[in-house]
Length: 140
Image (cartoon, rainbow, N blue to C red; front, side, top):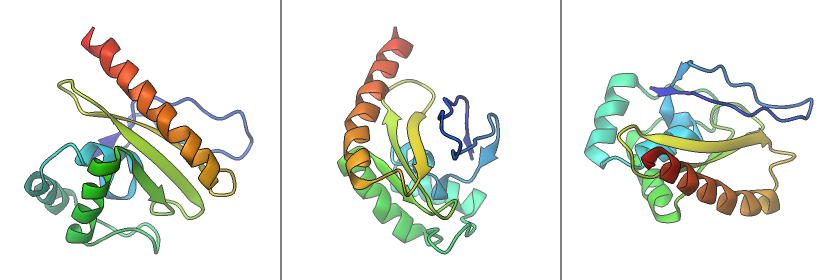
């Protein structure tokens, strides 16, 4: 399961709320995809077999092989995408924090009306840069 350990809330009235310490299914979260993409496919299949892949919305991927194929794309691009898979109308992007003993990911999410293609394109390099900086600080 995925556990949220930190959050920086948006100053806007409409925003995502994440309960710190909450354990959630990783298959329907961009951060979960970023974390699982760091593992081998057989290990991911084992995890999914143990925790399950419940449907949260109509967009939730509930087929392990389709999910594994999406992880290959995450590995190639270095960013995970979630579009309405956990909550309808919400888009989330996440990048893995490389290295370290504990697997970590950094994500940004918001309502689809604000998470435009342009904003996503601008956010991805920032997420990747901050993930690298965090990895260096943790290795430090």
